[in-house]
Image (cartoon, rainbow, N blue to C red):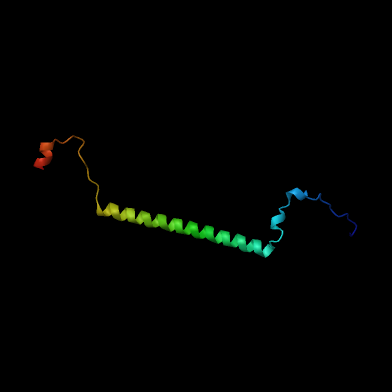
Length: 83
């Protein structure tokens, strides 16, 4: 071959070949990879959207109910009833 010897590689063992997948074409594999990637991207986007939505709800809840400083001392029943 134009003055060069062809490179020969050792053949794979038949035990290493997944014979069940031989009927799947290259286009079929590409479609499967695309579909799995699309579903993964959709799930990541939905998860991110849910986190952003939950953070906005949390922010609104903090604005609606301001922080209350409770005293560290115990209150007796009489004091609570008088209040």
